[in-house]
Structure formats: C-alpha cells, structure tokens
Image (cartoon, rainbow, N blue to C red; front, side):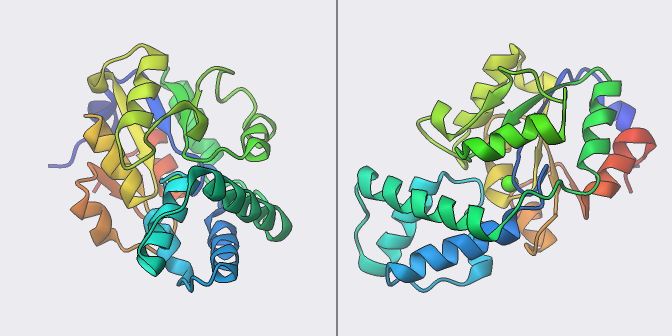
Length: 232
Ligand code: CA
C-alpha cells in the first residue's frame, strides 16, 4: 500500500530544493544556450543531451564535452570563460519563468513546518537574486548552496551534504526535491529521501534507475500531494 504524505514526511524538518527545472521552467533556454556556445567551439551537441548533464557545474559540463569531442579537457580558466559566454546567451534568449506549481509546493512545505534550503549547481547571480523576487520569504538568506560553495558538483553528494550541514540536520531528517537524474543520484548518495519531479523530456525510467524514492510527473501533481495527497 502506498504511503501518505504524512507518513513520508514524518520526522522531516528540511527540504533541500534544486532550482533549474524545479523552481524555474528555465531548462529549455539553458539547453539552447549550451548548444549555441558549444557549436562555436566546434562541438555539435543535441539540445536534449544537456538534460542528462543537468545538475553538474558548468565547468564540469564543458570539460566533459571537450573530452568527448577532442580527447582532452580544458583548463579551469578557459572553462570559466566559456561558461560566461553560455551565461550571456542564456540571458539573451531566456527568461526566468517560475515553474507552475512551485509556489504551491514551497507553501505546502512551509505549512508543514519544513525549512527550505536551495541547492543548485548554478552560479548565475541574477537567477539566484530572482528567487527572492519570485518566491519571497521561501528561503532564508543563508539557506542556499550554489556552485561557488562546493568543490564537487552533483552527481557528487557534496552539495546536498552541504545543505544538511547548513540546516544542521541528519540525512534522515531531510528530503531532496530534484528534476534531474544526476541530481537524484546526488541526493541518494547523500543518504536523503529523494523526490523526483519530471519537468523535462527525460523519461521516468531514468529516475527509476537512479533510485528516486517517489517520482511525480509534474510539479502541480507534486504540490497536490504535499497539500493533501496520497501517492499512487
Ligand atoms: Ca535541476
């Protein structure tokens, strides 16, 4: 029999929440920006493949794609330059659309007394500033882990372990909310109960493979569950 939301969230005090693809419907623009920047470097990429790298830091993604294309990585300095180009393209072509249902999700967590901590592989300061505008009061000022705070990005558990540390809770007292397979892997590696919400084109099976504890087909359905639901 399926567990109710009350059973699943019993003893949970903190939600560690990813940003792109969870709070913002921004991945479609990130994938375009990535594809354009890499094409200029002579690396042809399929737009959808970037969903598979989602969660990794920008520098790690660039290094991975250069190794695949040329058999060698790039220096951190060069990767930073290229990531700055990608970030500029994102600003040119994209905008930050709050993910439908994300506001309800955050409010439902708050109503249950669960503290929210942002855990993102992004280091785009504008996007981080938007959080305060679009989700006022949802996160305390210090309750965020960005690419700048970790040595190893997702799928390494470090970002989520750092989130636990900030909140001062054990893995058993937390949940992770993710939309990317590598993010789920990071959450599970940190020993945390991990919700996967499939807001992009990645098939459900990928999240099953990463051992997500529960998989929801959309953010509104996840919000419904937190507000009142049982999971089927
Ligand atoms: Ca994400």
